[in-house]
Amino acid sequence: MRTLTSADIVRVWEQGLQQPRWRLGGLVLAPVLPERTTQELLSLQLGARNEYLFAVQRRLFADPSTTACS
Image (cartoon, rainbow, N blue to C red; front, side, top):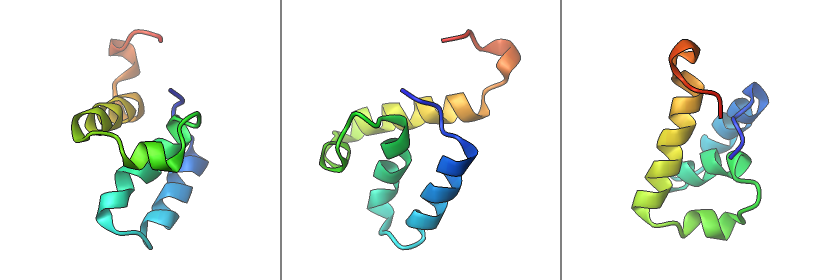
């Protein structure tokens, strides 16, 4: 799983403005899971999707001094 870059965040923000809310999770996951197709991301079960989204959140907002390198 990749970490979102600042360019990824801006692109997701801009694309998300024009999408229904239920697609936002897929937009966030697309750049961090590039090996998955859009259809695969949209068909993830809710628990799996949320697990990936929480991992993205931890990578973006965790205190670097308290996280192990992965």
